[in-house]
Image (cartoon, rainbow, N blue to C red; front, top):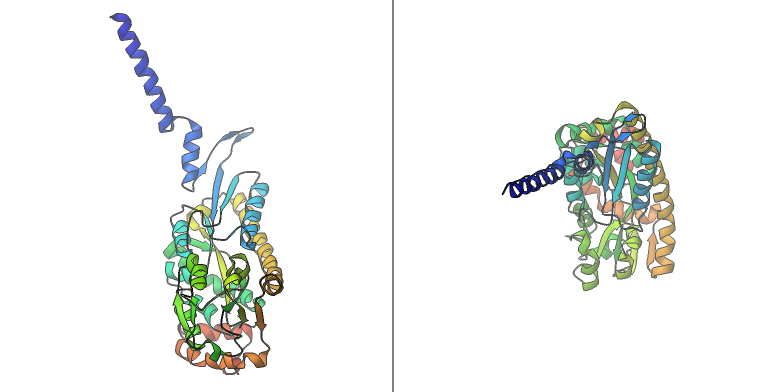
Length: 368
């Protein structure tokens, strides 16, 4: 009987030991669960204890996109320059989210620490009406003008609302290409060709207003369903970044591409503020430098890719690509004048005036 009691005590002791280990009694488990929530872990290393910060990035970019290559590059330089103290991982190809809205929620909750999302998603996360300036047609002549505003102190002031209201910090931006209109019916020599055509847009008032101004019928379709919708004739075409017609295979379901250059599609790298504020000073310097290098790396790659895609769409997919001279754009610009008049103060009183001053442009001659 005594031996039986001793056996029971030994068994109970073993069970308690297992439970304590599973509940985090060991340092490895504690570090893993802390990092999984976007926090930090403190493994013992030669020369002392050094915090390791897990940095998870999520995107809906396909493996072929330049955005995927850029985020992978960012992961590589963060780990290298931090000596492994920042452990970076990119989850692309919709692994963690199916839409920009879902990406926004992930970074707000610190489930991931960086996502690239468009301005309309940021505007939904906090009251930043100023970002509407980037959706006004024909305001920007080239990508350099867009970057001039994105990188300005004025844009940094706009972004402060995101820090206080949404708990995120933004870094510059990356132009993904002009928003071009791909259709089966064309060529789109002037806006009249689009009359009655169902053109897929993002669910933003300004994009829908643009297609309406051109005479088309704006149709909101979830991004993951655009290819099938075009294939089945549910929509007649779509408006998206030129490069996506290749990487997401939309070129297979259109015959004509109109590079109308009204507005551009771009992403803003958005980082969880609590996470970045938790970095010690030396890592914060390294992080900011890596982000700047990442921005320049992707901006250059996107520009080169945009030029390459124009040729690829024609040669590899047989799409008729129509690019316009300033004279040929005149009817498109005339079509959006009423849209400008109706929405001029949408970004806020005086905001558009400040942007015009920065760009050295005159509203009265912009669309003439």
